[in-house]
Image 1: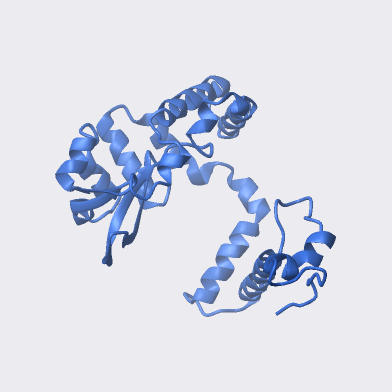
Image 2: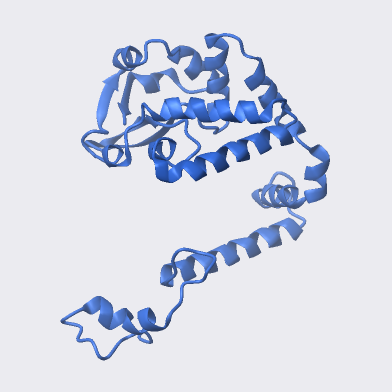
Amino acid sequence: LDLSHIDPTVRPQDDLFRFMNGKWLKESTIPEDRASDGAFYWLYEQAEKQVKQIILDQAASKAASGSNAQKIGDLYNSFMDEAGIEKLGISPIAKDLASAASFKTADEFFQILGELESRGASGLFYSYVSTDNKDSSKNIVYLGQSGLSLPDEAYYREEQYLEIRKAYVAHVAKMFELAAVANAKELAEKVLALETSIASQHWDQVKDRDATLTYNKLTRSQVKALMPTFDWEAYLLHGQIPSIVLDSVIVQ
């Protein structure tokens, strides 16, 4: 126990928290570059420094080919290779950009969504596997609302977030410009309009954290009935997702 932050003017039986942390609360200042501070942040910071040192040691080592140490070192070195990154430009994502710009049909759209999902890119909804909240003996797939870039649906409708929406459009336009996409400003406005439409179908934060409302266990046929125009089979196939996972899912 760190006893250096105790406030002896407070009796522990009256307020144990103030007794243990009172001196720290009175004397400490939260650094300007973050929103909180404390012992757990210090632990996090130390762990980050230790992980960094491990990675640097791996990156500098002559690790055996194919070993985890070699993979860690290669990944770190490629991430830090600023000159190489600048030389590559947008070429690493050129195929993805071409796919996004080229599809003409719904079938092609579902295929692209699946392919992106297989590589960890989010789409219209998110999915993950976890313990069934009402049957701890089983794991099950969860599906939840997604498709937004801003934190939640309120950012697309409330007046207090108007400046954030404007800044978001400017940001998206800049991304289009960097990707050498024409009509950047016009397309950025369309992105906001599309996400606003998606957001209009989202639950707000209060409903979205309701453990009862967000537990809806559905069968394959029920999921398909919920989204009848969505080609689940194509999505699963191109997402390299075992088809069986759709037999029983929890829609949040």
